[in-house]
Image 1 (spheres, helix red, strand yellow):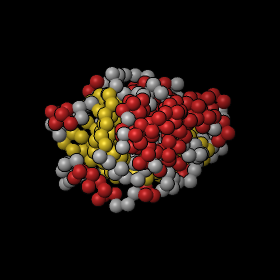
Image 2 (cartoon, protein in one colour):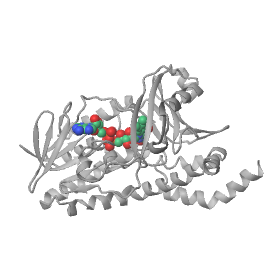
Image 3 (cartoon, rainbow, N blue to C red):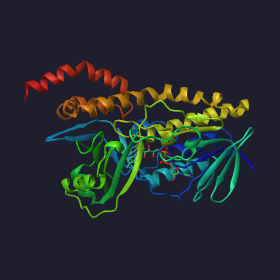
Amino acid sequence: MKYDVIVVGSGPAGSTAARECALRGLNTLVIEKEKLPRHKPCGGAVSSKALSLLDFKIRNDLVERECYGSRLHYGGYEIEARKPYRIGIFTSRDEFDMYLVEKAIDANAELKDAESVKSLTIGDSSVVVRTDKGTYKASAVIGADGVNSGVANYVRPRYNTNEVALAMETEIPARDEEITERIKDIAEVYFGITNMGYGWVFPKREHFSVGVAGLLSQFKEPKSVFVNFLKKLNFNTDVQFHAHLIPAGGYEREFCSDRIILVGDAAGYVDAFYGEGIQYAIHSGKLAAGVILESYEKGDFSKEELTRYKELCYGAFGENLDCALKFSGQVYKYPDVFIKLFATNKSIIDKWLDVPAGRMNYKEFRRWLLVRTPHYLLKNYISR
Ligand SMILES: Cc1cc2nc3c(=O)[nH]c(=O)nc-3n(C[C@H](O)[C@H](O)[C@H](O)COP(=O)(O)OP(=O)(O)OC[C@H]3O[C@@H](n4cnc5c(N)ncnc54)[C@H](O)[C@@H]3O)c2cc1C
């Protein structure tokens, strides 16, 4: 049987793309290499902007905690800002991702989990997808297979070590009262732990998500950095942890080739400053489905036709990712200037929280900050 579209990978990008394709009447197959629900190393912070992109409400039990603000640490400085409105939620990715997959199945997408895609053969009238269990045919493939995407090998060169962050994450079990007492409903962020990155403590229902991330090319001895971070926070260091890569968005890349579109981490759609990827995974999944449908109607899955997807992504969030990359370059290059500004001026972090809240984009925030930077620098200089 020939499918209209095969989606490789069932993270937020794949499940969203599959749901949108199936809702539009396309015969859609999702192939996921893990048995679902699968573990995904992640802070599990889903921004309000990301949630607003879904065409359904998230089940209440998936919201382990709500997020209303952030406490930022840098050197000896500590600052906290809270919003009167929710800027996101904290969830567990195995359950959150499974819920999105169920939504795709509800829309009529077919799922084959515990099956790994091994190769693609792109032909004139179809693409043949070979897995460790079988062979399938489709008009097009959506590569949603994450940062180590095999589908991306048919589209672009692999990420280099300056384009990805290495993240180490663990779950520290804690009682509800402990979590509430420590951070309750905010994200705790520690700058100065790694080069071009940060450490975090996020509150969940029965544990803290604790992690560190830094640019792969500059992240030396990640295990000892992580253990020292846990020690600094008085957390148990005898824990199981996971290491995983996070791509940085904002780089000029290919996202399509004949019959193939990349979405989510496979496309590198992650905010380079603070590593938010779920929002862009969902958004790119939606846009890819729209473009696949148009190609289906025209009977044309050529790269030229699919390239519209790149323009749509750029219009929707590409400029934001560009700004995040430039911003992270500036901020992490001069931490004693810019991160110190964040850590010593509540109004800056307060303003920045409107970015994940979806009330402001990066460009607006950067402009807002640049105009005020001389004032904040002077203020910090005078108060030394
Ligand atoms: C430690 C860490 C913390 C993070 N914290 C946050 C956060 O708090 N908030 C946020 O917004 N983002 C966070 N991110 C980024 C976020 O996790 C990703 O951007 C997001 O998961 C991307 O979704 P995706 O669907 O593109 O890929 P993924 O969620 O990685 O899904 C890819 C899927 O493809 C499957 N797959 C891979 N290869 C194959 C194959 N050959 N055949 C079939 N299936 C395959 C995988 O098993 C996986 O299920 C974090 C990332 C890390 C590593």
